[in-house]
Length: 310
Image (cartoon, rainbow, N blue to C red; front, side, top):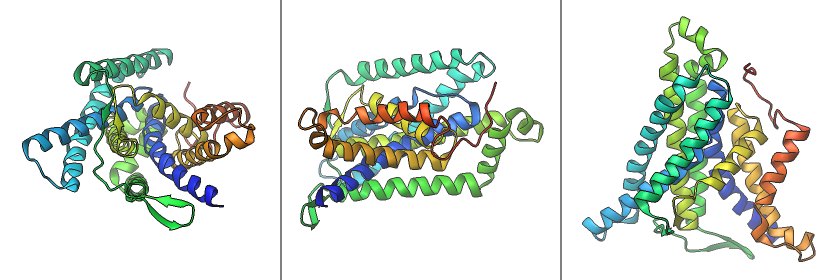
């Protein structure tokens, strides 16, 4: 039971980060029918920009409180990633909306490599230690179960952001415009909705969530480097497909389910395989789930709400 509870906690931490990134994938697909494979790299940009901001502040004003450093890092990383997300949509994808689907897909892969290369040029190839701005002092609420304030902070922030996004989409004027554009952006334009503005706003919001996910991810693993966005981005895409690509609640559920399955797999894989595999093989579960979903339920757990586009 202690192992089960500990792995549940670990799964919620990683799953909430996957869910934040998966929301960006599913929002863009819901409106454009496009898989933005560069989205995972915005997580990396957010983490490295936050790290750079914290390092510069520490050098300029030593002794600042960690909360101030964290707030400053987020305050710079989120707008930066939003700007990058807007530029990706404006320069990379807008002219390709009516192109064959292969064209924007190849462009997305190219943008991903471009972001990684620029990050490598700016921050180098080496791994950077991300400072622990939120306490990681372990607490033991019960025997065999350890939790840190950072883990609690990650879960609370992620769930708050997911709840805020749902309110934005379902209750705000922008949310109504996003839903209308998702149905048919040409008809939405005829009804007075600025489809280009709504699509740009979707990229901007998704990029901001990816930046926050990057800061949370780097804080939990204390590492930041130019290639850190690839694996979490791929897992977040798996989570979006698992929940139902184009479905916001599905992306959240898919991220949490994937995190829990991955965590339970890491905790029990050695026992289940009689010592043949260990927890370092936990990544295989994400891709096993992706394969199973594509074979047995391509629409995902909660289905797809947007119409298929020719």
